[in-house]
Amino acid sequence: MEFRYGLDDRPPLWESILVGLQWCAIIIPWIIILGKIAGVFHFENADDRTVYLQKLFFVASVFILVQVLSGHRLPLVFGPSTVILIGIISSQGFGTGAIYTAALIGSVLLTVCAVTGFFGTLQKLFTPRVVAVVLLLIAFCLMPTVLRLLTETRASVPVMANLLFALLLVLTMLVMHRFLNGIGRSVIIVSAMSAGAIIYFTIFPGAFDRGAMEGAAPLASFLTHLTTSFSFDPGLSLSFVICFIALSINDLGSIQSMNALAAPPDMARRVDRGILVTGIGNIMSSLLGVIGQVNYSLSLGVVLSSGCLSRWTLVPAAAILLVLAFSPLAIAFLGNVPAVVIGASLIYVLSTQVAAGLMVLFGAARKLELQDGIVVGIPLLAAVVVAFLPADIVSAFPPLIRPIAGNSFVMGVLAVLFLEHILFRQTAIPASSREGADSSP
View 1 (cartoon, rainbow, N blue to C red):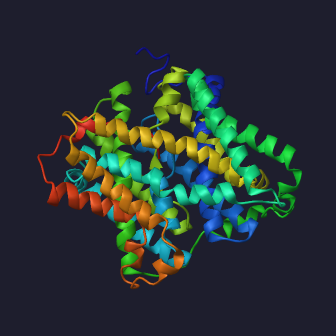
View 2: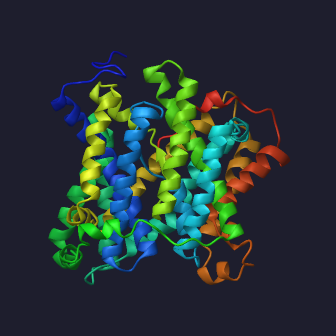
């Protein structure tokens, strides 16, 4: 495919800004969706949730620049990871100190693996069936969260009204996906969230949280919330290590997916540097007490739709995110998106996640058999059971194993690794057969 600008070309400023806005249309909805879910999990106070979103915008902006300038140096957007979000919301009963200490340990180990080259050994565990399950698990394990978002009500809005609104919004996004292509598809989420919020607040004006706007945290509050307390828990740390192994494979697939378009020189070094920067970015995220970060393979959509391969168009996008990070009023406004709109947007996004998992599974270079269904199906069923376990049952687990046995994603990953590499062990299909199949953060 011919591009108007190559990887290292610098487009005119006005064109860089326009493409940068397209990048923002990709990353801003993800930061709001994942950040709002984690913020509600951590905090009851709206000001604290605003500060949490500010820190997410800050980390994303800084490490987009670092990746573009000295990491993989590819046109890939960088932002919060759904895998780490699952680890966070599965950590019921643990304080933020224990959660982000565990995340810090996982981040440090990821960085060490990138530096020492041990990451190549870990890659061998992730055959196409394992990768397919990891992608599918992200969608399945987030369904309890989606259900809570759809049934959350404000200002006495009936639950049935929320469910009907969500159904119509999801159908609208699917219709847009059917008839749009290129740049149109890349802005479906931000368009649906914007229009959905406006329509929802028009129908239910009492649901708009004016208090969150009036009490938006002052600029200085961001600078006073840059540290978090730390508390070590061995079981929780092990569960996050597993999450970070999955994140590393996600990151690898995202970086390698750009190889098909850009075919840049010295791709192996770009991969090593990109994963190293991801590890450092996750260390900073853990120190700030926010969701870990990953490269997004859906960046391909922006490149293809804009016809611009230049990595420099991400610089204006990073600048916009940085301005938002220090704009608490703007963050509070963006964070006012109704929970039902967030939930409906997640349903659409997770449907693409399921599609990515199925593409990996069916793209394997052989005919599928019953054994494939067992290796994929059992971990998914196990994860669903754990995901919907009542909190009182999870709290009854022994403290040492609770963070692992109570984490649906981790249990699913452990199950598929056991089935793939022990019970139904077979000759692994080369990792290259799965490159570029992941379509989510």
